[in-house]
Length: 196
Image (tube, rainbow, N blue to C red; front, top):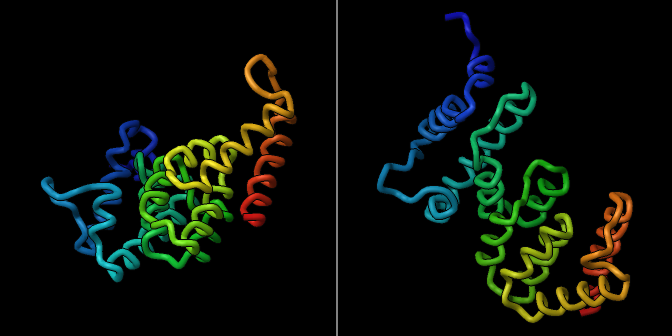
């Protein structure tokens, strides 16, 4: 009887308690997907702008609270929060959350963002800013999902640069070399974007 929620969560490898808390939060906003309704990213796309903003505010506060007490988040929560933020926040605010590490952009979220934004010149710049904000390996995987000439140019330049630098299979790197090379590639990517 005297067990705390934190104690329950530690003994909750499946995340049942954590998922239940999120469900209670969403139901407080009358946002509980039914068994037949869509879930995940599709559920977010179906939300109205005001509802999405309220939900983001609520879930962001929950995220901050759980982080403060080291309480586990349900599986997929970070992806859900990141895509929700992309859909309801202005781009500059979204990027502030990304740069400060509040939002974690994995490949699934990045792919959905690339698909969500059309290829207008303004959105191409947004996509490039988002892609260049993550580690190089994630950037390259995301560029593969983006069918645009800019993506092809960036991938080919990065590939040519790695060949000229003598990288590739059979050339193992130390962690320090990897960090230096990732920084160089990201600078190259940003330079290419500005030049184009």
